[in-house]
Image (cartoon, rainbow, N blue to C red; front, top):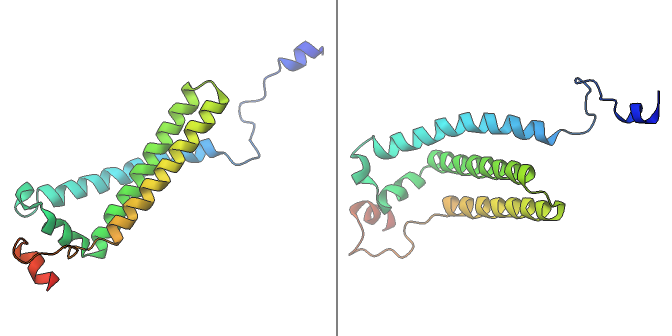
Length: 150
């Protein structure tokens, strides 16, 4: 076999890659997180818009009441984490597919990762450190806030 023929040899399609396959795990994550996000988002919308008084009930006191429960804190944090990682992974795929310059691609992927990490950290802090009584004023607050902040 000549050198040209050896260079043109295509490996068998079922050849296994011995390293970690980040793209495969990213693909699996996109499918699993997509299914979970559908459940989380529609549950969120149903509770906020259909249960009780509907959209008229949503105000600061409603959010304060929801975030008083660890269940709703974790529901919203899980939705936040999955959505941000899902979106950043999708953007990473687009950058890898369409940005030809290796340096620009590396900078954009790092920027996406750092932005997603910052937003996940910030959003998680907001949910778990939410204090409805911060800046509480008895004369301008609803009955619900008055009951929990005094």
